[in-house]
Image 1 (cartoon, rainbow, N blue to C red):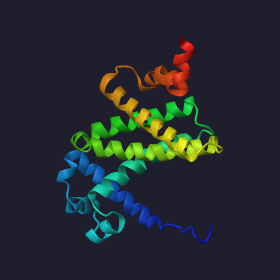
Image 2: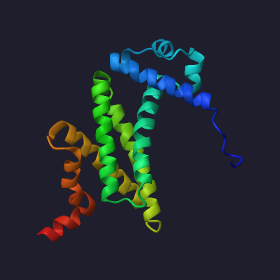
Image 3: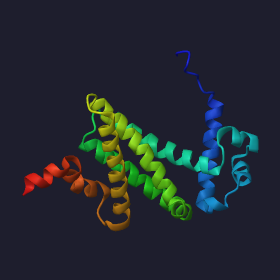
Image 4: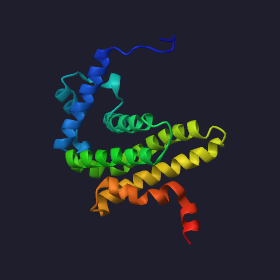
Length: 194
């Protein structure tokens, strides 16, 4: 362990998880806008000071709950692949669709009320993950072109997951596999198809 790395006390991790789990449990019962800090601390059996030592407010808690759950799965999917490939894209897409289904079924009203916030959080985190993956593969490319590509990938994958949820009757893996040629090869696919 280097000097800059500090080991986080397991009790702190457990308390943080307890607060997050309590929040999710409450969000299954009522809208996030109606959940108070008092509700969260009572459910988690912690005091307000403990809550505020981990989160600035319930919206910070919402963001961290979403990103830690989803992004841990997405990061794990990317970590299993050395390159950003079709299989990586499929795995990430499946992680996002699973997350969407879980969140919308467990916290339906809160999900609808905060869909714009949730979308922004997910796209921002996906963009960062894609950027890091692309940077590993294309070290000689400009940072700006990699940033743009990561941005487009994050919006494309997220948009596809929303379209699948709202408009498709096929399995998510089948859905993404139908789109992969267009997604992976972009304009080249259209130009050579003619």
